[in-house]
Image (cartoon, rainbow, N blue to C red; front, side):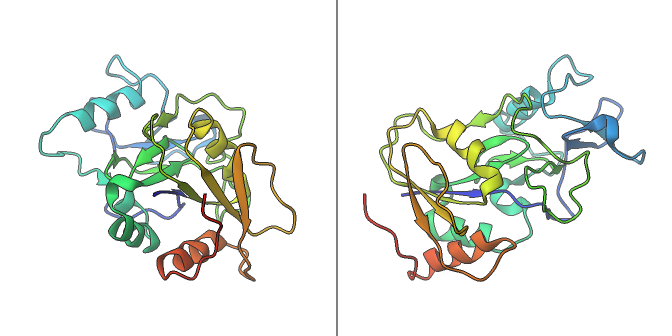
Amino acid sequence: MIVVIQCAGSKRADAGTLRTKDGKPVKFVARPDLAPEDGFAYARPDDLSDQRASWRDLLLRYNEDTGDNRLGLLPACELYTPAIYQQLADSVGRHRLFILSAGWGMIGADYLTPDYDITFSAAARGADSFKRRKNGDGYADFSMLPKDTTEKILFFGGNDYLPHFLALTSGLSAPRTIFYASASIPDVPGCTPVRFETTRRTNWHYSCADAFLDGTLTYAAQ
């Protein structure tokens, strides 16, 4: 079984990031032109860096290098502060946990990921306009799920992330189950929607993932 969970806005304070050639830390956002002027160099993941490659390509190279992780990037499952990410990694195994990131795409739990501040969610706390990614924005998103997997895929995430999940898994033949908390059934072609009963509205998918971990989550076998 493969588990996919959407990313979180809250990142660890000690999270590392990529840097410009002169050592300035890069903060990845959706609209660098609207970002505040502070100690960061702001960029989109697919912007051209000052090192003759996009920042996304530099991150790929960094992960391919088996060196000393000199920039202190954290594995994706350790980057976010909510405990559910590490709990899922411990339960299903890092090789079967993937993060649906608004900045980077579908990334593995072990993928070294820089600090970033990009979200699809309009309701996210502090979701300033420079952080908001729209579904039509052009990103060369990673799609790290094995193309030939036949394992059941469970998705824990909100409606704002559903189009992103559907786009990055559309070519898979593996059965996909999507949990939702809204009153209406989401349009999820090729997937099985399962309603999760909860009174929680903010980050309800964490409660859904908790129920999965403790064995109380009900969904039909496929």
